Length: 508
Image (cartoon, rainbow, N blue to C red; front, side, top):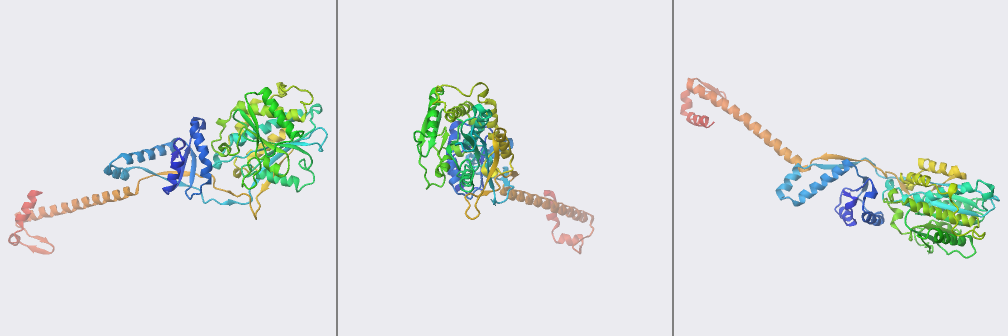
């Protein structure tokens, strides 16, 4: 058993080498109370823990009074044994209390036919279905070493929060004919993002290969993927191929730079170019799924590298979200996207003109509420099915602002599955207070000694009664029949036994 504040990779490996029955890592109730260096250290260790194959089960539990009491008792017992003498250790071993930890779960089994759901909705521009389409994408699922503790506040609760706020803002613009833009907007909350973007992959296949009519089939202006937008004073536009001048994606890049420079000078903005590495098992960013299908796409994030440990950590909690940064990033994206689809720059709109103000401003309370809702529950892909409360709420929320909202489901190929999920991700562990095995031996010795003393006492009393009885017989000159033999007093005297009995009686 080890607490997060005392956890280290060396201790973890040592426990595994000692062939422990299990490893229990105790997490604090509030991550904000943990020093940042401890959190950062654990986040760096998580990928190694996931990559390491071990037969020793590893459990994570959130601390409470009972669990901390067990931890303190076992820690105190270990400390006292290390500093005591051999006799004290032996005595302590025989008398100390111990705990037997028993889990109530069965062996994990693969879940067949598990569905990964996604949700899509649209806003149709002025002019109908033939208009170019801007696709806005964010994956909703989280990931970490313990699925039930993976709340994914920044990755990618922040991305979904921004997507939903953009849906709300643009639904108001698309409500009135005079503020309709000449672009269709397609919003897609994808599932399985942490499993190589399986929801996006199958969604693209169904829309591009298996249908004759789709917004993706015709004219896609660009795809904007939202990922980890809840912290920091930097924004990075990740691209697989730098956009060419004259294209709409280059115009969006230019607008982002302009909005940041004129309205948010404290933000550091840059474009990060990384080619797609098809030799890797996992893609770096979600936009690469679209780029593989030759659709212009990019991902905007405050992370400079896709290898940042924040993207796959159970330490990614609500306390780590900077609400001001989230609101600011939402506004930057909304302002730049609006300037692009309404062509405001070419129409002479000044760079510092703020569009989303007054009644059209970003609603801080609503954005915070959505962020609280997303980060209050684990969203690992193997925990969310098509009938989950989370997915139904997400579909309902998108349905308030978008049209043609529907779910899209992905199921693994039975012949060559791309992913396999398992059950028994959450178990109940019972702690029983027990004595060590040597205590049973000591107890048996004590019981045997007690019975021996009792036996000697009973036998001694019987002997004393016989002696008294024989002594009285001698004085009275009577005969005593012992063991079927009758002896007179003279015969007993001849045996010279009376003096010995007299001496024995005096001693007693």
